[in-house]
Length: 267
Image (cartoon, rainbow, N blue to C red; front, side):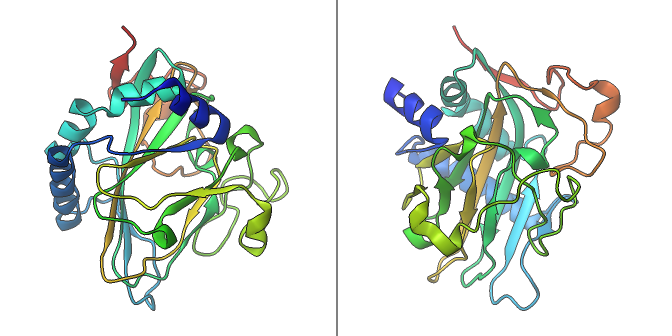
């Protein structure tokens, strides 16, 4: 399933690609789950592309409790153990699911960013999976700056208008202009087939362009927490939100809550 070299690359680069992690029948389950989600979007869903975009980029969050196919894929596949081993953690706890679908012709890019500054967690042991159910060409894939997870937190900004809505201006350094000097950065990215998974740390800088060609790009992302992760309530709206969690879990508490079930423990 996963060897020491893969774990080492994840720890060093903050992003790895694991080929054929999932069987075709597991991908069929996940594809059905995404299609069900697209047909019945939750109140948490949002369209992340502009009205003038010839395509459409839709996201939805935290649907595993209501989507039987999502639950089956998350709990019964290789995901939990792979997460635990990549994090070098004795446990793996589900954080949340995130569906991202870009229709053909979508121009809207996902700008360079880190994920953890948008979240309500502190700690280093984490991993996110980016799992396409459609083929993804190199031009439309998720890209990473290798090793950036070992650096500082950088200013999170809103994707559509680049506003600093989370941390006050000046409290964190801004991201470098990666697109203006791509050759200066160790950029990683992979052409992908259904069954492949990209695994990355929540502090690894990453981005994606729009979708070229005639096929949609349906992706399921699942995020996991390890032993050292604790609750870090924010004064602002996190992405996603967990209403009422601050009353149940004080700051600094382990993420021991029904919303975040433990899905793997080392034997």
